[in-house]
Structure formats: C-alpha cells, structure tokens
Length: 108
Image 1: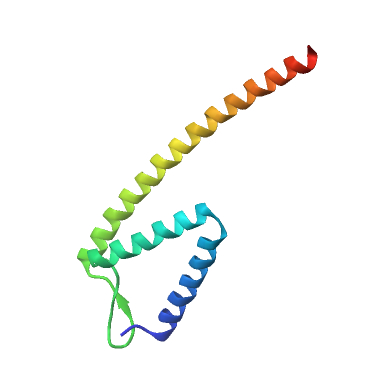
Image 2 (image 1 turned 30 degrees about the horizontal axis):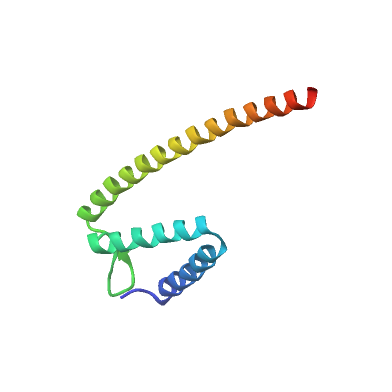
C-alpha cells in the first residue's frame, strides 16, 4: 500500500506538469514526453512495489531493466542535444552572414 504522502506528492507533480504544459508549446511537448514515459514504465512493470508498511522496493529484475532503460534514455538525449547544437551552429554562421550583409549595406 502506498503512503498518503507519495499520493499527495504525485498529485502536486501532476499540477506542476499541467502548469508547465499550459505555459508554452515546448512545455506541452515535454510534459507529453514525461507522461508517455510514465505510462511506458507502468506497462513494463518498472515502478516500485509497496510493502504493507508502505516501504517501496524494487526486484533485481526491475533494477537491471531500469538501468538499461536509463542508459538508452541518456544516449538518446545526447543524440538529440548534438542535433540541436549542430542547428545552433548553422544559425550562428547564418547570423554572421547577415551581419556581414548589413555592414556592407551600411557602408555602401
């Protein structure tokens, strides 16, 4: 049985996610990814099991599978960050070209 404090924390977390989702489009995308990740964890049986006294525990199988998923998530995050950094680098180059064109037009 889950302790009431965990249930209250989860409800507060959901309210915070709703506020982030309402703030902007990127926030809504991030919140959707978080919620899909939660559903995937539940479906894969990766959430903790609660004992009668309210203590959460994970089986060795859950621990190993969670570690594997975390490695995959970290690798995916790094690949996405690399793609974003490449796009930003291209935008920086474009900005320098625009500055050069504006300087040319001003001097002309």
